[in-house]
Length: 173
Image 1 (cartoon, rainbow, N blue to C red):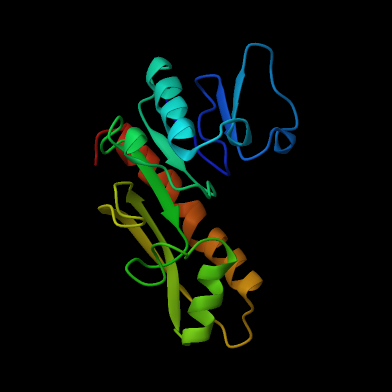
Image 2 (cartoon, rainbow, N blue to C red):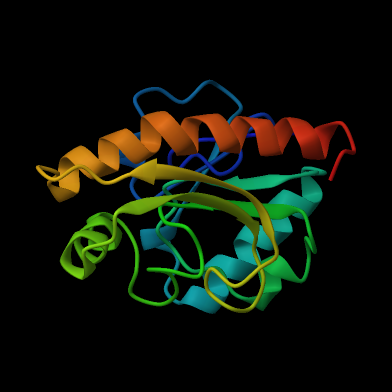
């Protein structure tokens, strides 16, 4: 079961994971929504997530825009079966605190001429898992965090993430 893209952690199995139920326009009958705010603690959320995905027989977890750090209950239940796309060329601008627009702001503040995106396996270290794929994107002199974000998504993330999923699904990784 493969289920990528934008905070939708598990789709094909019938489990939808979002930060808020209001983010989901429509939930099909029989689909379950696991909403984080209803779970009091990170450990409770991680356990519920791992349990639901295990019960659903999930083969691959794709984190894309999922801005929640999962703990060992999840990544130990799915070793080398959770991947993430990060909007920089790891090891630059990654790890704790580097998420969302902050990554692009940091790249521009540092003055890099090239940045990009990385798809990697998820493990106990934030953005520290084995790298699967990377794609570079040039920084333009007039870039803002928003323009850089858009270009990295279009020229890197949207290319290497589907390719990595396909490679894993077809046992090339």
